[in-house]
Image (cartoon, rainbow, N blue to C red; front, top):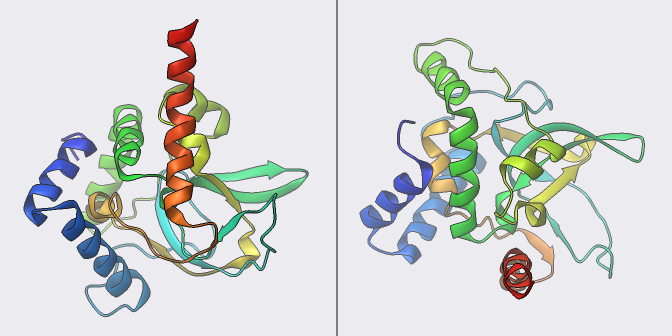
Length: 215
């Protein structure tokens, strides 16, 4: 992964000729490879339900939370860049950035930062997998560290936690598929419409910039 993710994503859009085709092809890749298992199998198998920080995952989330003012939506098929376990009120939960909750352009901004700070670990893992070895070295990231390295990307709106007991059909997204996953939406959010989630993301992402200009 020598090129920046934003450059790879730009090339992906060019290859697919439009954002619409890119989204469609990304969805089909995700569905056939990681859900239905029709096509080529994923390169790496998960370690039970333990998520490794810095790996990207997809899974079925079985949570039955009621939709209300506090819980406006539930994503049952996340695309999660793992931060590992996080303590939430004394309960340890799997945490990370759910790409489904983030518009496409900010996703590339986030991935560029991840690439900048962790590319050596990511590349080493990828090389090991391509050579038939294990590529499970985690990156050192958590919520507090992400606030520093991902500042200005709005990533907090995509931050999510999941009860490991509610995770089923866990799959590790191949490094080679990280670019297509930058353009995927898995269509499994219950509650608030995705266009409203994305609109709020952009609003919150840009508001601090406007506030700074006014100060």
